[in-house]
Length: 374
Image (cartoon, rainbow, N blue to C red; front, side):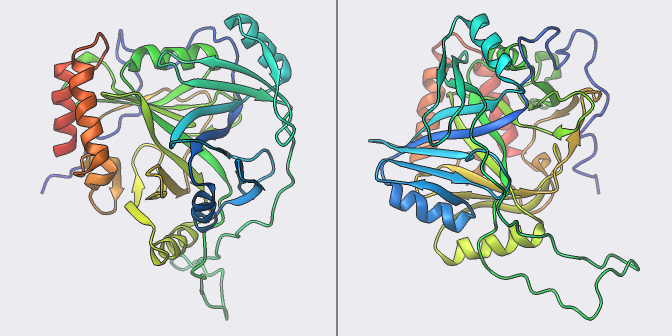
């Protein structure tokens, strides 16, 4: 039987003339993703899910909700009350205040102070899709909280645990930190080059439609350039599609037991499971996907890859089966083709995108259908 994962990933970088995966002279090099910002109409409902998912609120008022993990630093999700649910954009943490000043000057944007609950300074930019992208520094540093410790495992003949049992509690997984955000764009190449050129991000992996590598990539997993210090395989992922939108965000937990037991807790409390548990190909993360009450997809993950700046991008075909090394098949909900309001919105976006001047043309649409069926 043919191995469905054969040839899914190449460690050999670009062919002649292909995208190199990094900008030659970026304006700055951000250090990490800082937080994500949302608007939601029901903050009570949002907080209930957040606690079940494993966040700790640091600010909870009638108008605003801040959520953190156990790692030290700023809150990793900021939610304001609004008339409708929407994603406002990501914030990235600069390595120094001088980088915020340099970026603001380069873009012709002002530097402003952030509100006191967060502190620090910010430069607000807009990516090619009009999404607000914030770059911040000198934010208040919240102290670490007691983390959920990984379990001690006996592997093969390596005995590390004796006279002790494994009894992981069925409680919320404790989120440690924000890992990455995935965005869909109708202007994939332009958007990718913008993030590489302005924020100094570098590509870990490119995906292309099966049999169409000659047309270039349609998705990229992008990491921070910290030189010889390892960074997450991706802090940002960009994918070509018929609408500019948030796809999902991912939050690190301690280990597989935390991810699985935390998922059982969410299931018992009536929350919507999207896909998992499995292990990804690009990034290698153990994953489990959920939807919050507003329909936003969020991921628990553990054991992801870390790369320094010496690795060249991998190249692989984009297929539904290639999203995981093991685990259940990708669901229609995860792929965005489950019948319902979201699929209808995406279908309407397809017809709109095909009438506009962007990278999502008829051939890309057919390639996307092939991916969903693979």
